[in-house]
Length: 293
Ligand code: G1P
Image (tube, rainbow, N blue to C red; front, side):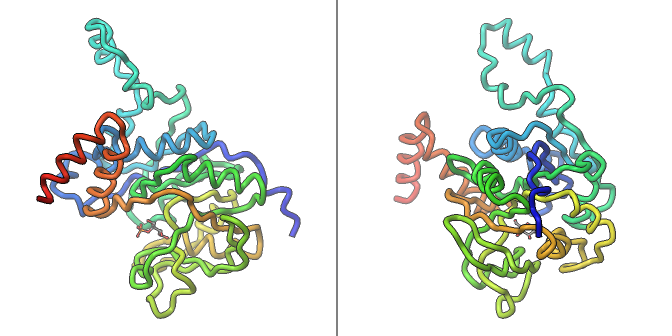
């Protein structure tokens, strides 16, 4: 397998954000789940920051009905800025929300057919380039960020990469799971991929944790991908078909991962990030200690 063609720079990132967020109702009735704040940043902001740190320039949001507030968040708010400037307030807090004009694209996923379908909806914007995918529910917290660690690995091996981490055996059935080959440092060869296997049938306890770098050929595979686990069109199933055709590796993220798709994970992320912030640490620790009695 000659892999020199699988090393083009990764400039685009796809953010599937069309989900209904039913697990967080009623909070998510009128507000997209991706805009729920972890301390003072919406969940989606963490993913966009992580993408930017990794050198990604173009942001593709796969949205759906009721999700336009996510796009508003990354737009210029003239009245807000004029009012703040008039009051002598710094515009610094708005800095992370600025995206170069023309570099934010939205596509609609009109029907909720699964993650694979959501990614496929971005095919025209992705075109003939490798691209990253961020599932914003997975808050990957570390320095450098998860995608930066993956881009560093990509520069070495090219091809396709997923981020992985180990979970207890009884949890693997909620995730995509890799069949690992040889490991070197934080890189593991991927020999197989299976979506939501039974714990007894899982090839390992290394789960895919919501960050991907994929070659554009996956879009052609998604085009005809049949339904998989849960009756959904699964990204995992099309990725599995790339194995053996193109390089495929997993990167074990050196950092912390918070599962913000669950309420407990969301609270954990909020606490951990507050405790990590110099401006809040002491107060939050004192409050936590008081609450715990
Ligand atoms: C999706 C992917 C799965 C991955 C997970 C990470 O599953 O299909 O492979 O491990 O995200 O959070 P979902 O959470 O949409 O069921």
